[in-house]
Image (tube, rainbow, N blue to C red):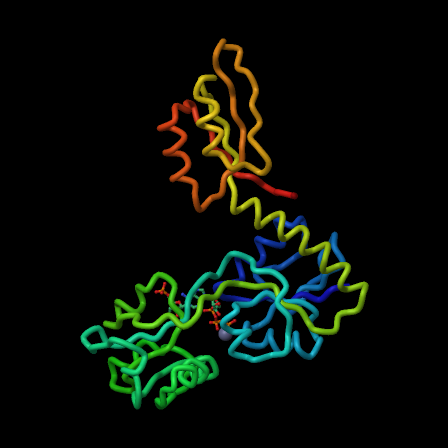
Length: 284
Ligand code: PRT
Ligand code: ZN
């Protein structure tokens, strides 16, 4: 039995549950009231925890694997291993200062008071840049501290940046990028490693599917070469004749992040009647 720790209630909870669901793993979680539950169709026990506790659970082997933000894993300095990036919970850790404070380079925070919930990562950034500053450690609401003269700058998580703006702050230094990641205990036995491999295989298929779209389009035969050169596909596109003479149907897979760019190029190259659908699982 593999023991998986996920966040009980917070930004990573819904996506972690959805990922397990898409991996075909069923379990009861009545509003996550319970601390743990057993999956019905995979040898997995799921622990619902505060995210801050997950690194220690993993290090101590109370849980075997866990989903948490890289930011937290790095801050905890726990001796755990990265297994798989999961593509959600994306954010960055940045330094921000009041919007009218002049700022050119990291040395401008020399001697300043910086509020953060991530003292370890901030200390590392300061020492790498040969800066000395006062670190004010807080457990939350860091963004309000410059406005009440508790700090001159903050070091915090940013996603859209709207929290910074609404507190009159500007982002001046991105220190690291983070996303939700599957981590594991260092000393899993062979049986657990084999279960983990099966779980990762499913997670990768789900993640890959989310990153891609399936596309079908009609193309006049004389434009096929040009259209196919735009479509990367997994190997090469599938081409089938349409019942209308001189036309073909082309099927392929394109990456979500290049989606609109490629659609425009295909239309410009003469493709018509484009149909785009989501992919549920993708196994290479
Ligand atoms: O209760 P528990 O301890 O489990 O949860 P928590 O409150 O400590 O963590 P939670 O749920 O807020 O965040 C969990 C993880 O989500 C973080 O460790 C990050 O890895 C990830 N994540 C992704 C974020 C954000 N995006 C994010 N935007 N965590 C926090 N934020 C904050 C940000 O600091 C700002 O205050 O959300 C606010 C809105 O951000 P903007 O930039 O969109 O305005
Ligand atoms: Zn937390």
